[in-house]
Image 1 (cartoon, rainbow, N blue to C red):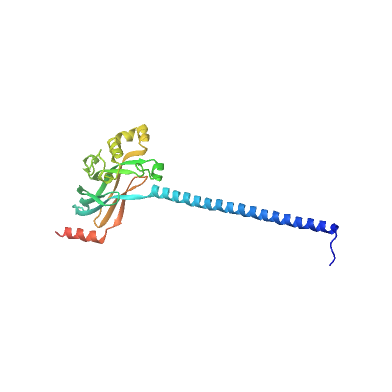
Image 2 (cartoon, one colour):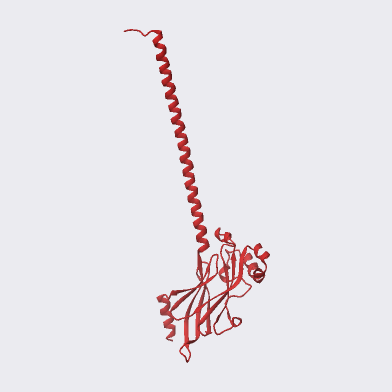
Length: 251
């Protein structure tokens, strides 16, 4: 077998070294590419997780800002018509509800006429506090002050909750009532003193009244928006309630 001369061995050695260096360089480049790719994949994954977290937080804020809860349900238990055939006297049953929409108080009102006004004192907090579910300022609070009709002066309205006291729906062992006691005790100051209102985080403090003609066979619901005010909604009367009212009317 012929032997390679020393002159032939040198180029071959250089070729082998060059190939080894090229392989090493390619291996290093591949390793660097994989490291960069893995790093970017981790960054993308973290960005997606952060985007999902921000989206969930935004949706939670929107939900808290737009949600509403029922604070009372009302039905007509009796309605009398006058000589002209129009209602001239209406009797209402109002059931107040707590934060879990459980009954906490019942009231019966007999009003002249048939258009009922539900008058409340309203405290609306800053939108940021509502959006972030602040433990004290996370929702509008309402004191149902009185009910009256189109044939009554508001000053003659029939009382519902005592002005200056924490409404029953906002009291309880699990609620920080001290803040709410000071809130209602100083309600009229909060209405007229913007500096004091800012200290309490109050955006608006005012009286509001909602009203509708009241008819038998309908369920009326007083609701309050988390960052808004009172609403008086109309719902179909549940069959069980209609049966009870019919039975009462027969006696």
